[in-house]
Length: 166
Picture (cartoon, rainbow, N blue to C red):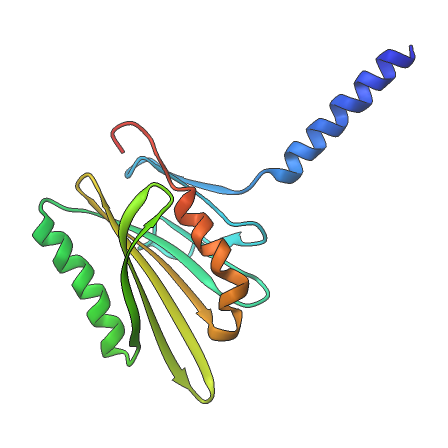
């Protein structure tokens, strides 16, 4: 009897700990991709341009994952350049740009900043190609929150998973 009770309590504890560790994930069949939300971030559904979008409730920081199917590398360059042009035309200044490998993906990491009324908004962009699809992972956060959310941003990229054919 004691053994049966012990096994029951052990199974219950394991199931509770598994639930506590589970994270929200966004699956997109069109792109054959699964994107996992960082811990303590909520999945938002009001962004029809993004495959996945997450928001941090306390700081209002956001992370978007955007995919665009392309035909050639030249089209990818145009897509990426248009995105960056939009930021710079909105008075964001490019702070840095470097080749980067994050998780399984090689691409470019570009940082931007915009200061208004003493508040600086930082935008970090990781762009990469996978097969014929261009991907942007964009983090929006105040400069004072950047250190708190950098790991969450990187975890989104590191945990992007593609299905066969995706």
